[in-house]
Length: 450
Image (cartoon, rainbow, N blue to C red):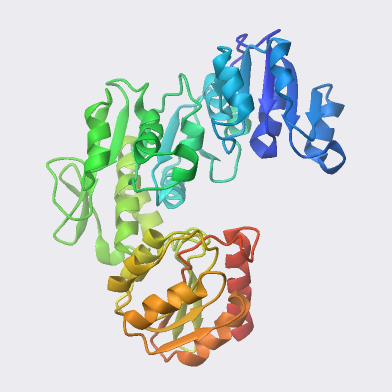
């Protein structure tokens, strides 16, 4: 960790805890800051806050009192999930108090360079693939960010010979000032999180922050098939490395005659890649580009791509029961993700779908349901999804109470050679705390079949 004096004797407010807030507060305390933590959860129900209190950090819990802003704070480190229209954040910005996320803090203390990945879909798979490729190439990678390990905690332990591979959300990227990755990847951009950002433009601008501090000595890997992403690339100072799963490119990562190529060099045949789906081909190409730029050998890249079967809950292959293949795509919390999952299979599919009702309809699914032979629905959106299923001509549609009950019903409706796919197209919060919980229940139900 760099021994920076930036925060020594400065009054800093950490707003919102969770893992990132706890780590940031503890780190700032070590760096000599006068830290105050403010979290909505009452202290009696807040073991994280209690732990910080024991370190000698001032803790205020149970509310966000606006009068706190009168205490002369020089910086606010906010939880990424707190929106900028929160009264505390609006009040801070009106007073000229800078607001950052802990990713910025991680960059400032890190001795290791960053490879940063953002986008609407594919971030976690791409982040994991880059990490695995660098690991296979013995490049000492560490993994961090929105994927589950707090960036500033990882940066605290990183050495100069490490590389931090970090997944970044738009929420995190809105709170950076100097963050500058050696390599940045934008997987794709679609409408998302508009309840947080307000407009499509604001969401895309937040994503574009990943490259705002890059120079000609850094790289930006971008999806050549998306005009919005290429528009961001036009305004970047980084060296642009495009990727395409559809067209041969003059340089970058692309598909040519059944091979995955980089800058004219054949790296691996597509038939040898075990991860299914066209959308995953884009994730693979962008990951391969980052690995090649990091001087990872083709042999190491091949080793990963011939063994990597997917990130948990993201089109994850669970196994086979009586010649039916089961896939867990619980992370498919929107229609696009389910479209991508369905496009990955040519064989008949029994689809398990449903979840939180956000008010939208599901007609966009209809063109992609042609291989779906049966549908099992659950959750608040069951009736809406059943409607589009009938409109798509699916003759067998069953409604069940939950995912656990859906699995044996799906199995009973399937035949040898079929795929049984959990890809809900909805968030899980109507029935399950997280998509991970939903996916684990699916996995357990499949194991019971075995």
